[in-house]
Length: 42
Image (cartoon, rainbow, N blue to C red; front, side):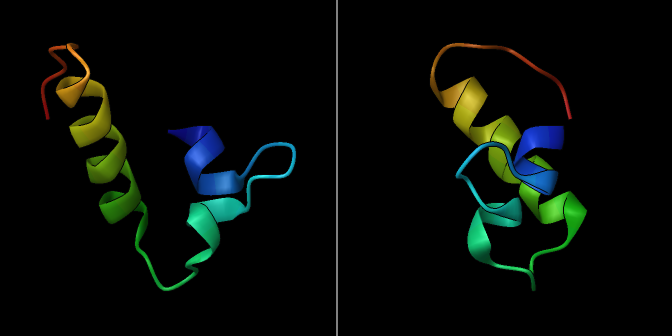
């Protein structure tokens, strides 16, 4: 989640959308990881 919030290498923070809240970004990361087979709780 920290890489999504702060950015890493050439990936911008919050996917380039500074208007997203930290909770929205964390929710998107949770959704993507669970969609790929993980089972993280909110």
